Amino acid sequence: MILRTPSFYDDFKCIAGECTDSCCAGWEVDADYASLDYYKTLDLNTEIRKRIDSVLDSDEFGNTIFRLTKDKRCPFLNNDNLCDMHIAIGAEHTPYTCRMFPRFINDFGNTREMGLSFSCPTASQIMFNLKEPMIFVTSENDLPPQLNEIDAQTYCYLVKARKRAFAVVQDRSLPINRRMMNLLELGEELQKDLDDYPSPSDDIDFFDVFKNPELINPLWAQKVNSASIKAVADENFNENIASYFIFRYFLIAVYDYDILSKVKMVAIGTLMTACFGEDSRTIQLWSKETKHSQYNMDRYKNLLTSAKCLLPDNLKRMFI
Image 1 (cartoon, rainbow, N blue to C red):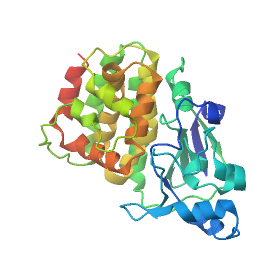
Image 2 (image 1 turned 180 degrees about the vertical axis):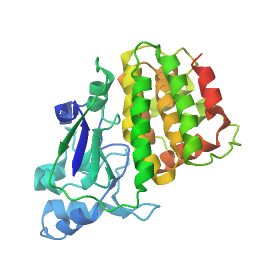
Image 3 (image 1 turned 30 degrees about the vertical axis):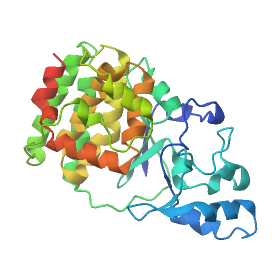
Image 4 (image 1 turned 180 degrees about the horizontal axis):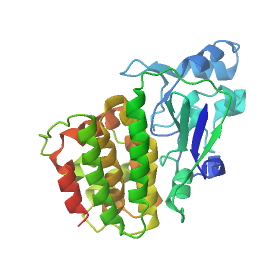
């Protein structure tokens, strides 16, 4: 299998209890089947087995989860912000989500792409502070290709299109606002080749798009409520945000033929720093609030196609 990662991927190291945030607070953690099977092998009389059994629950989607404490902390997160499950049975037996975070995986047949999520403060700072254009490293391993229903012609088309998208956002001869307008125009062009795009009908205000019904950190609500339209800074961090969104989401259009929404996400990612705060904390908060809440992310995906304020022409006007 071909493996593609950002050049800085291996530089990431979790700083555990020194972290300014916690990936073990605010959101529920799924208990995957493999982990559940292992927990059943633990002695019923051990403290860790009793604690595990006492907090297993189901969410509204039918997933098995660990029930959070009243203050929305993982039940295994101790007062030093360290994981008691990790300490008791080893990191290899914690849930898959915990072992992987903040890494993500996108599989496309014989190609696997792995990156870091902005949801982690440490990963966010790495990407936010890059000085050179974001580049990617390709290697090979012995893993077998993943089964899929990808249309090969569409995938090849999108791979070539993504190269064009990277070239647009990383063209430092132009200011970032011009690059984003050019990218939106490219997205409209690509969408016409793939499929029809629905006509939006929702008159929601631009800032209301970011008022997530499921709130994880009140600081995000404060940022949204005090936001205002400002010029997008012509800084490397906005190029890095755009490059990240292209890498993570662009090729997923092979499954739904909706490339324009992926391009809109790129543009909106740079608008967020202008409107809500030009620091890595802002994009980290949005990512944690939105991408790691199924309810919030489903709402956001729907608004990308249904909200009039997110029409390409309306977004372009915000970059003028």
